[in-house]
Length: 278
Image (tube, rainbow, N blue to C red; front, side):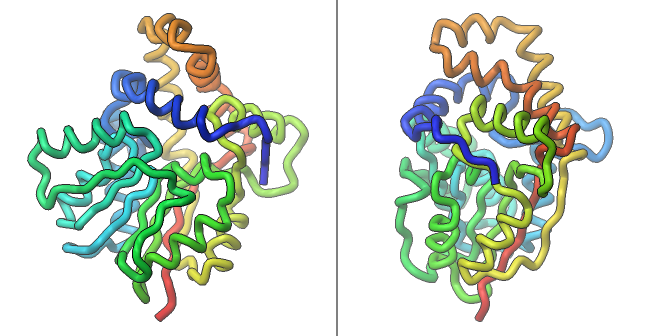
């Protein structure tokens, strides 16, 4: 695992409060990577990542699902509309919470997802109240990952499933260059730590969950950062970021860092499906 001490939770919250507009303009309604099988548009690729994770998790219609790190609510709305799930989305950002709620109303999503502004590391749900916990590219920002997994496992019903996508640090041993690349990503993308595929397996296991499916999608998703980098260079977003504060410029300046880390093996992009025993 790669850890850095400089990241603060207030900076993460502020980043998503202000950068939500950046994400929407640069990328789309889903704040996560796209998944490419061929030459699809970014919009299709974003949907394909959600669809693929839902397929691997075998999301059943009418299930109760908690979307942890829901962003602007893109996946929550898809799961409600296409799987008729009763979804509660959780985001640290009040701006994202309001955006997601408004979007669900404007698109008349039924059943209507519920969105709450809360810290994923402290929020409490009733024990054994969820069929699924869903989290896409959120755990990178958590400070005590093992504790979060144990808490999330308590929300699941017996045989309930946790579906997760995450940025991963490559498996050891890493070269000094690879460690530096992963550290740069943590610094620029506000991640207090990045775990490896084996780290996540241990956190699931220690929480009483059995990983029933997992895989690496790095090659399918890395085009995300090429497209975002090109869109930054074609637009005036960088100048707006300078006005809004140095952390937002820092974020934009690290698109190449994560792309290079993927290509060198310093980082991977993985998915996991873990099940609670009966």
